[in-house]
Length: 459
Image (cartoon, rainbow, N blue to C red):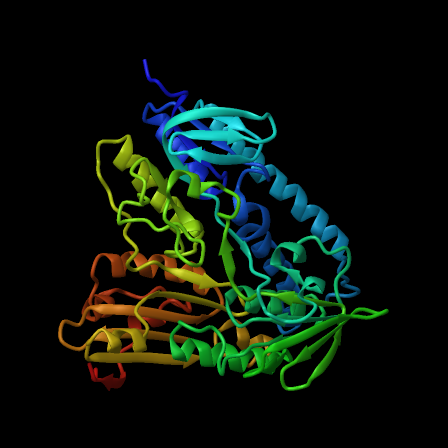
């Protein structure tokens, strides 16, 4: 009989923690999990899922406009923020219950309270004031929005967490940041009728993405009427009788209902007690792990955003699966962080997988670029002028497709399937040999024949 209460204790009930707990239990481990704030974590409770629901809501005004070109007359359409938030909350609660149910069905012991690491094998349950022990610990506590701006009055600002629970739709909102969270919320609020000002210290939004994607999205933002203040920082926030005044380093004073900070995320390790077990943390607070997600303490593992490797829900789930296979499945498996597809749910969307042009050159490749820009068929009768962009980055020597970048409607759906091809090492010739589905936007990926550029690495 084991000297521990459990074989595995998971701290954090987000997508990664739930998957790690459930699969480990199905493999025969005695598993417990602690979660204080609702199962599903950031993704379900205050991230991907509610955000995508708000994205859908924000797209209907354009759909109503476009419908007129197709013979539809839509009269007296109106939007009610309170109804959207109530319906969203109901759906989120349903999904969270599903997460809890799968744990119960797998036989996982559930603790709805805060867990603190007391030592390498002991967890203190704060609410019930008792200790439990486990042979292995899995830290999957995720992260939270940063407020570390250095700006005066930052406590007056909201974050993405708060944006999901606003009582009313703001007339004017200032969003500080230039990453995907800032950009997605800029489109959400703008689509729902708010005036949006985006303040970003960089010269161009969406740092780290392919330059053509960044250019396309930045131009689209401005054409839609979203005010973009680049190369300026956020200096001060002052609460007034009517709302908030945001002051930038350039001296702009912007009156708004809310100022939202979207300046990055921090790991949820503060107060977790990992130092009691000797777990090594990076200066950022993220858990330092090896290729197998093992921390500096051999029986303590960490997955997901708390490690800061790739902060995406599917990556956390993948890491959880690899953990379970390694520790309980007899199949040592290191997470594979190459060719991770991702989407930015702006309007239109971005979908990307593999290397950007800049990344391929930095890695020493000589590359051929295939790029096209066109007006989607749907935009013809609607009269919408917005164009779609697709780009393939191809190794000039082997013809292997190194990266694919899409800007346009349903880019997220397309990039998931393209990722399979890239994972299999597909070449441009194999793309060319694939028969197109016509008429679709995606067919352009297999009908691109004209090379637009060849780039040679300087490295």
